[in-house]
Image 1 (cartoon, one colour):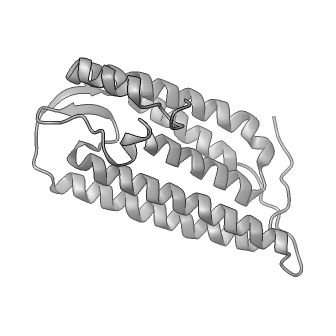
Image 2 (image 1 turned 180 degrees about the vertical axis):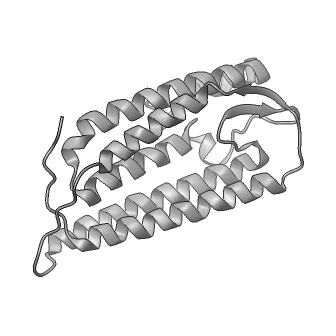
Length: 199
């Protein structure tokens, strides 16, 4: 299935590039913090989530997949407003990811796991939603579709991303329940997955 792109202006693509650089920067900071943390054996790890990471990534990629058609001529107020929205989405994603990864500290990892000396994180953005990093990734997906003019791609991108995210959450919650038992159940009953007080 191929969707025709909506013409976009260069400011939106510049905003997307700036936002992607900001996100890459905070991602590299999180990786560096993880490498500096004292080593501890994983008490639980789910490598199966690697496949679902790829599904999530594919969903994000689909949002921007295809040719980008740029408008010619002067930049309209609508184009500048669109660029501002793209930049806000990307900076919000970077800030949310940075806050979540800092709050998790040495507990942050790409693959679902708990450390032998790990604790259940319930502060920072985790006091409001259980999956702030996945919410940040969703913001990137939306910014990518908007900046590239591929709104129609969301018909495929969102379900694919949702599937990968749901399966990663399933694996991660199994790891956390095994590690923290009733404490995790109480936390899960109190804090919603994505939208505070709703879902």
